[in-house]
Image 1 (tube, helix red, strand yellow):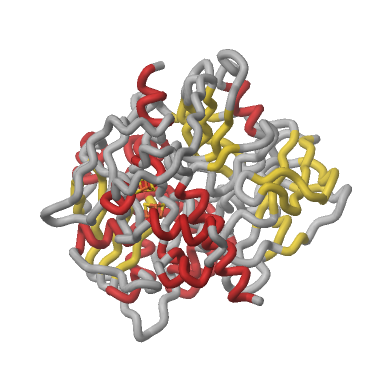
Image 2 (cartoon, rainbow, N blue to C red; image 1 turned 90 degrees about the horizontal axis):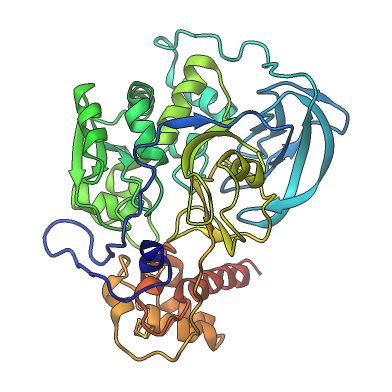
Length: 449
Ligand code: SF4
Ligand code: SF4
């Protein structure tokens, strides 16, 4: 398929637009390939076996609170939060714990997880899925419900939501931005969620607004999803339709576009009076508060030229990727690569048994893959032009390749948001984002020492 190559083989035949008016600088316009935007969300049947990692979020991994042979129901807590910047994890099927061990992990490579085998159908934990009146709950109670349900950012970062909802008193939140941009090509999960569950998303957003006391609530939607923007508007919320441009959905870039404010280097959105939450996170938080439902499933997109039927799916956390692939009719041929996430920021997997976790926004299977050899830098500065963080990837990668990590830090490697724009445009096919990711982890490791 020609289009796949256009985007995924880092073709240089693209249009690079630098925002000259309002909006963030840099960025790229990859071919969208959102083939599944008209496909309603389908429910993947609950699997016979799940593997639920104790680390699915930024912060300390959850601590196991179950043992082998324990019986669990859907929604039973199997790992408790280990501190404030941590998040609990819950059983997504009912059955028996058969193993607690190291398992493949889509982000970490491998990590401690809990394998549960289904034995007794669909039995929910007591009290979950009943409808609760939450109007009179205090801010503290609402945050507690969101925290206990293991809600984390579903846009990909998986930062514990209760932490973002607890800014210090000296950092008041004036504007709450709900991120419905879904700027990664090929992914359409957030788009479908906005079309199919707008009220749940809006209720979740209003909960967040109440919790942080934001004066303004605004939804941000790219102009390739005008139908979603129309539906949200009809439900009475303010929607800003933004020009489609990658990475529009990144927090700092979104704040620049909507508020024309720059989050300072090393700072957070709260430093400029803003808070950004993804539409999926709003919906999950709403379910946590109204139905006491922990985060045991999520909507994701399965797509790519290596899969028979691309779909948007509601999938239980811990479901092996191969189960989801089989639900989509299986492979078209011999898969060359399985990517967890979108084509720009996703991570290639070494196993088809890797589980869907809270941060899995999509899985891409590719059959045709043309890998070009890395060549020498030709000093064209394309990577500098498109970097939305104003970095100089060409210099930073050379420092990293030469193990000069202090220089890489001085040149701002820690500000890299790993968007992949630089690698996308590089005519020398230098895997710049891989160098920068490695450089960031080395700088962190050395500073911890
Ligand atoms: S991956 Fe990092 S260096 Fe490359 S364009 Fe994105 S922010 Fe800039
Ligand atoms: S790293 Fe690639 S994009 Fe950047 S200046 Fe060199 S050749 Fe150009």
